[in-house]
Amino acid sequence: MLTMQFGPQRRYSFRGREREDGAWALHVQCDWQMEHEDSTVATRLDLRGSDEKAHDTAARLHELLVGQGLVSVESLSAYDTGGMVVLFSRGYRLAVVSDGVEDDEDWRFFAPCVDAAHFVIEDGKVAAESY
Image 1 (cartoon, rainbow, N blue to C red):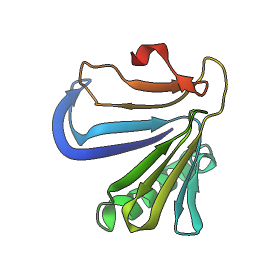
Image 2: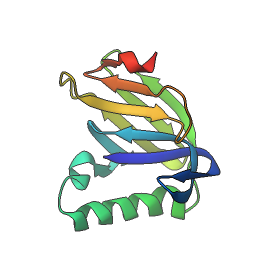
Image 3: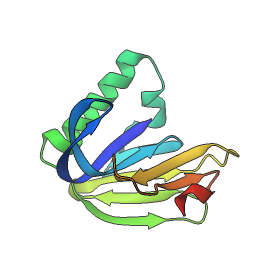
Image 4: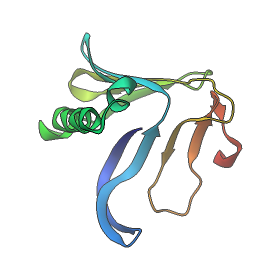
């Protein structure tokens, strides 16, 4: 699963551990592709291989999106099919495509450890739990 943090950093406790993460989180379980200008940087398949391959991909993404200076969201386009495209600064682009599998979560956007509804796309549609 691709996980990304957005917004200002905040401290909170999660399962007895102190954490510091962005105010918002995106978890993507369907097909996705991260691009930089005209080249593919990583895809869902890069996180589905061995643990070593997944860790290497996560480290590479972290270095590109955080280690070389934070990127920021410049725009977001959502589609009726449950997909979206997020354009980031410095020429990065995240394309998310719903798998369209019934009762299968595609992606969710939420505030970690905040008692509020999550925005969830399941089977290419907004899930009832989002309301």
